Amino acid sequence: MEKFLKVTNAPITNELISLNGVKSIGTPTATATTVVIKYMDGTATTVTTAAQVAHDVYSAILDATESALVTSWTRPMFSVKLPKAVTGIVNA
Image 1 (cartoon, rainbow, N blue to C red):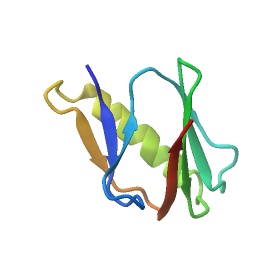
Image 2: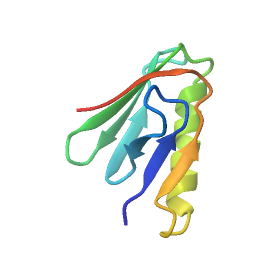
Image 3: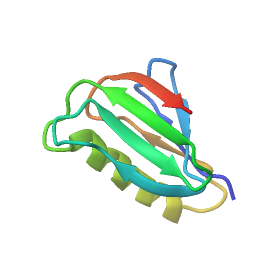
Image 4: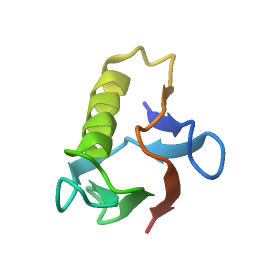
């Protein structure tokens, strides 16, 4: 079953972040501008925003991921608006 976060305030409207094979979600500091989602296959998605306040973007992604994964398989996309403006989402 494929699951995605649909980021509604991304530069490309409704940009998707895969939740399949997520190994970890992290951010270097409470005020960092990036949150990195690492996958089992060695790739990563980096979400870049304005500076976080007390891990607010990280927490929003973590909470949305948990909520998305417990929703029905008939809802492959889970919409989330992050608390800071998103300037980029890159998967590499």
